[in-house]
Image (cartoon, rainbow, N blue to C red; front, top):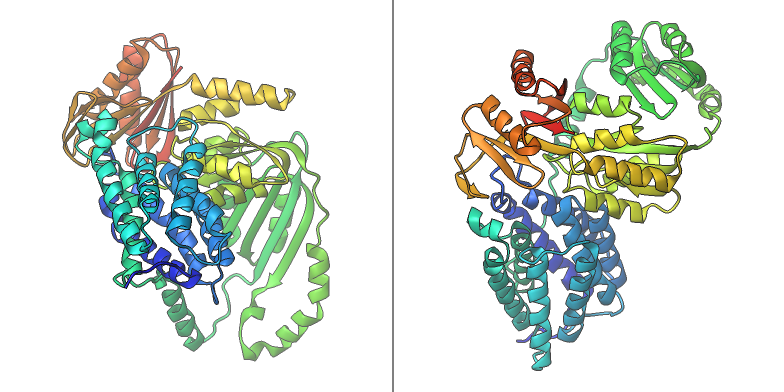
Length: 562
């Protein structure tokens, strides 16, 4: 029997089936990444994006079309990760713009929604490329319109033909993008979109994968709580949980978070420290709260302080302490009501992977550093929350990865109270150079232009290892070998990491360079980094060669040349 209309509850069931089908195929989609690097993450990014929406859809009670569309659009927009995830979220956003105006969907309205989905996705990309997820989406949308034009009313037929068109377009992507053909793969983003629609179809015919969210962490936490309830209570080693917040005095040397944590660990445990602009927060469990307060006063004016006796966290035998705690609740609330700190004119959010690189960013003025990068792209929501944490009227965002720029732009569009400027830094060195180029007394437009120009003037190379045999840009790559990736593609490959690095620099600089910066990764020993630096200095005797411990995962070295 033909299915001619879809009610909101059925749409929700089909969407959840699409999300689970994508999740089941994410590793295969990851492996379609053109560059054979160990962090191909298209499938992961698209799965995290759709699961953000699926979680909201699954939480709906009596589903209305408006609620369903809001959950899909808002959930995917905020959860979008990576370029593929952002484009997927825009496809959903466009579809729901049409769908939300109806109580149910038929073939005609589905085709109209598909058309809007494609239009919205293309508009989200500054320079759309064919041979990508956009091509697959367009083929699907066009087939939907063709099916409707011939008078078809069965939604099952419509979806089967849409999938057929999407698969045909996917198989043709290598003909449109030579780099796909050379690598012997189809477009990973297009494969992800096809997996979603195949899952949607399975949901319609009752064969979809049952939807579940991973609850392993919550279950484990529950078991820990049960175990702790049975354990005999013991007095804590450090009696007082002490917290202090300060505004830094002008001219004071700004401490690093690591230095603060190191001091706090000397007087207690569970030490925490964070720096947000000119506000420093410190907390620690200690037997000497005065030490925390004295340390805070060396940096500035205390705006918030609290000392909590940790015995109050123990159960019934401490009834007297609990009664005392209730009596001074009002007093504690009064202490925590710190005066509002006036917003500064500008602030910075930067994305970085690796403790060393994050510390460099903070020392150059970054108010908030989001942990992420090539191995894990932060979501639109992550970036938006980071912007909200910066107490400034204007916030400059440095994605420092070409796969994060779209999510950063999407976050900027969602922020309504602050002026947000995304500097299109595509690499860590570009982000560092952009921060250095900022001039406090310059105007917003002047800094935007200067930071962008400075960032794009930096050449970057990254050394990792290959996870499979392939050929890219005429370079034969072997699994397990070192591989150098530049701004425009593969620069060198081989079994000796220093030789690969020197060839990479030659390709980047043409044999000359004024400033060469080296950031060593988490898997590089200090003596190995020093040896590599020495060889670079020998080859480029007139260059200023700098080495810093970046601590980044996956990439042995990140190197820039100016």
